[in-house]
Length: 289
Image (cartoon, rainbow, N blue to C red; front, side):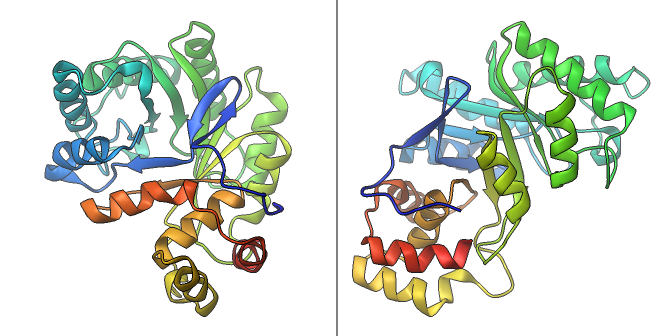
């Protein structure tokens, strides 16, 4: 799907005129450590944060606590940060809800968005993402209502980009075909193995959508143990995880990493700047594509 570059990529890609970093720190499943780990990631050098206004898996307000401390201390400027959160339908929520459960879907989107801004202590987002369609196949009325409400927020300049997560290629194709404001980002689970989410990734590549992959290192057969990955890592003097992330970026995948290790944060941030030999890129990309 991708051909080896002559040199390492820049730290970001541009989508609809917005710079999206190749590495995003994901804040799911952090619970009571969310604020401290978010701050640790930002101190380490991450400049993109992913969260969601969904208390089941995220603690968005704690992300805001970390941001507030760094904004106040002057060590982080809002304009240097790519900040992304999500709207989640009622079926994916736990209490407390970020919106009125009895309200129409468009109003729920608006209420969730306003709640996110309050949690994060900002006046706009860089990306606002639909946290998965309401149906396992196809798009329902609620999905179109939610998307149209998100389009309104984008047109008003309250979020620079809008996107969708946990989506099939047929759902993405339908959304792209009908939406007035096209999805700029897609976030899906993507194990680092051949053909992983290949159809969605190919659609994103063809339509200049930033594909964000999570769970890259967590497949049953861990890619960090693959002989080719370990051989490349040995030749470069880097870790297998760094090599996997660099190969993912070469394949056009924006990497979401949720590591809780400071050392791994530093290592992950090096991945975009790694410059493997062209032969290693070709061999490694066969593991991704």
